[in-house]
Image 1 (cartoon, one colour):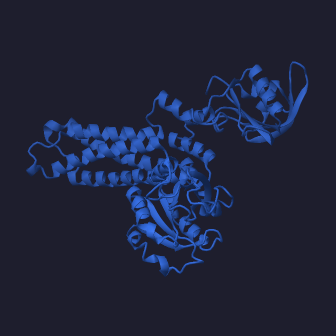
Image 2 (cartoon, rainbow, N blue to C red):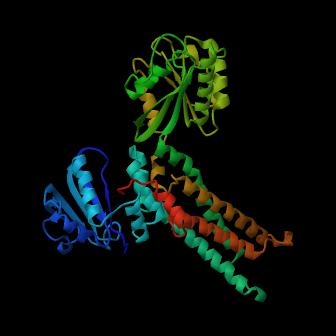
Image 3 (cartoon, rainbow, N blue to C red):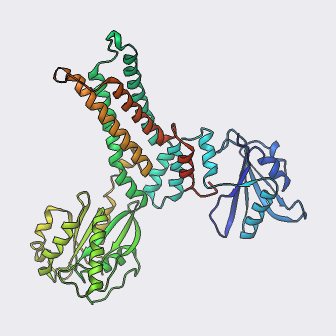
Length: 469
């Protein structure tokens, strides 16, 4: 049990109907009872709520009517005795309540300290604790879904299974090392190689999941690009349902990137409206805008090329710039605009070269919303919903550790392949080096769940939590 009793406001800053102040520690009940008028909290059953008053013990003045919810350790979130005080959401009431608690023996909680105590108490591992932070920060249905799965231990279960397999491998190899003079083989090299291949396959899937999961968590970057006056800003405004970008018949109105967000099919998209692309920029400012458009394409996972059928002669140059900057793993969607004025066949021959790279070609009229539903439906299907229930890496720390584990397992695989073809390898990698690589992989996986950690790692992780959590 922790020595200090900590307190913090757990609800969002500002004025609200209700504010919750959380108190946790060995003296939680004793300290709150000093400013509480109602049933003695230490005598209350755990997970029960009680109505009372918050009193300033010095003046005797009533601060507020309050509901105190009691959670007794070790069955509480932190493992400590905990009281959550629900008061009216006045800024004055919140600050005064916090002052009273500190004056009577509490210490102001550090960022993430409640969840850190839960981790230390063994109520959740490090990956699950980071899932709590992701849940609080979730901005879409799918990012919430991923955070809930992580908080409930989906990723941890996969990693723990991998660690168990690797510990089994390490024990067999180290057992052989102990009996090396007796030339005893405790496990078939083919069997060891098979297990290693399975572990590497799962680790590879995990590392590959990072880009998609990170995009779901932070918002999928989608660049709207095309020639000047093609209808890019109109499309942005139509998608976000407000006049976010200035629209005018003057070509080159948009000189810089404009960004907004929208949730489509449960996924947050970060939509970037860009400056128009053309071979001969009008001035230095437009040149800078085009350079920024190119950078936006390079960073996007989805690029929507808005095509203006009234200017087919500029399409080859526009596509040349787009295809030159388009990342290999990005999706290109061609949106042929002004379809109310032009027949689809009028322009298809001009974008035939893009068909090889384009994932989808759509016909829209941005200012009347014609075809926009088809675009949003397609975007909503870009995220494979079945992947949301698999183990995913949403955290750069997890990705780095999993990548290092995969590198170590690749070394193990090379060594085992050498042993399998020992006739062709007179000097295979020593078995003790294989054991070292296995232990390294086990160590890196343990860093993700917190089985292996350091105070510096914990301090860095929980420093990014809000104070009340």
